[in-house]
Image 1 (cartoon, rainbow, N blue to C red):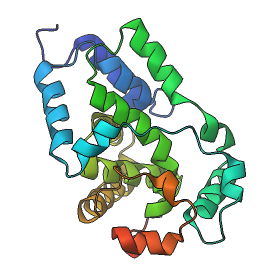
Image 2 (image 1 turned 90 degrees about the vertical axis):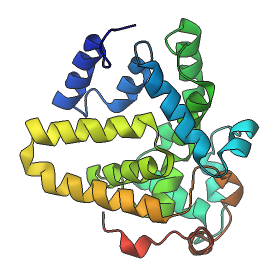
Image 3 (image 1 turned 135 degrees about the vertical axis):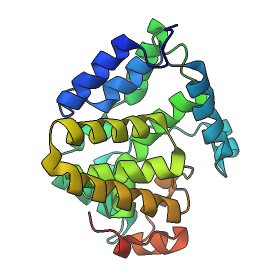
Amino acid sequence: MTTTPIDREFAEKFMKSVDEPFKYGVYWLFHEWWDEAPDPAIDAYRAELGLIEGSDSFLAERFLPEPTTLDRLAECPPESLGAYFRQFVVENNLEADLARNYREYNEELTQSGKLDRLPDDLSYMMLRGFQIHDILHVLTGYTSRPMGELGLAAFYLAQLRFPYHAMRMAVTAAHVAFVSPAGITKAMDAIAEGWLYGRRTPNLSFHRWEDELDAPLHELRERFGIETEAMAV
């Protein structure tokens, strides 16, 4: 274990992401961190997850279905969550991502020993987060453009206080501070809005959204208190 809170070899990888965040993304940083992550930080992230209402029962269930198919989404009624989900996938050329099995990659890393210090609950929420990421785009109204992705990341962080999204904020803040100051205003607007949006919205991560694909999108937003009119990214 390193004698400094932030391992200096990991810090080099962090700076690589800061230099070129679209080439070396936070996804890679997340999986690199656990070898040398400080024990208090790991414990704190696990504790934060346990403090969120509904986390205990959802984590115990470990709901992780097979990826939803385009054929299944094509069966959904007009104006439903599934219909809008399909539209989002097709318009953004995400067909390959829809079927990608992140579980297999996670299992490979786990077997290699690289994730030995990643708590099981956090590992599960990372996998589940990838499964519902595009569904949350649809529910919240965030686009797939860079500021939409950043706003959604801040939304996630406000709801889960999860390390992946915290790293995303850190990389973005460092990039606009030291590499691209012209992006400060747009980035901070997206982060601030996403954070407040996530704070005022009931938690969306502990729900079986795959069971709601046929439900009208506007009814789901009303039921879960998702106020898309207030967001602008």
